[in-house]
Structure formats: C-alpha cells, structure tokens
Image (cartoon, rainbow, N blue to C red; front, side, top):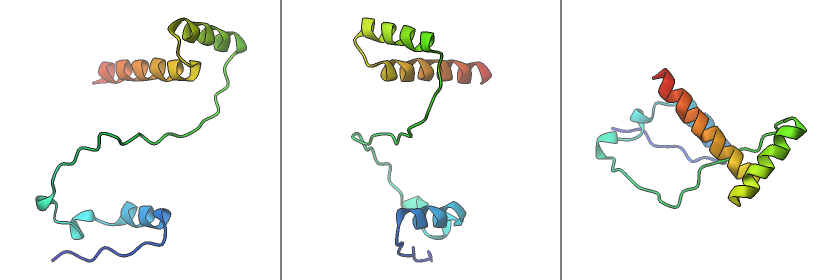
Length: 90
C-alpha cells in the first residue's frame, strides 16, 4: 500500500520533500507510463560571465555572420564542447 502524497504549500516545500523522500513508498512505478512532453522548455538560469572584450567582440562578429544572437551562438559552442568532452571521458 502506497503512502499518501502530502499537499504542499509551495514548489519549494515540494522540492524539499522529494529530495529526501523515497518515491517508491508513494508511487507504484510498475503502473507508470512513458510520457512525451514536446513543448516543454528546459529550465534556464541566468549567469554572469566575464569575458575579455576582444573575445566578446569576436563572438559578436561570428554571430553576426551566422545571423544569430551572440548569446545563442555561445550556447551552441558550449553545448558542442560539452558533448565532445563527455564523449572523450566515456
């Protein structure tokens, strides 16, 4: 018999609960079904990044040539490098 999932006052309270609770005590995972969420956008976090001005200007030039915002191009470059590093270490 599964335990009853408590009602939460906030998302933070729910996150705190699930960070320490064993979900198997609350959910019968054998009854679970795979769900596709095609319109789900990944959560993002704003960061502050210090770059040499010359590097930022070069990034902006490259982005302009590709007709994309420089922040988007930077994300593409980072994603490509992260994928490469992860493949190397696997």
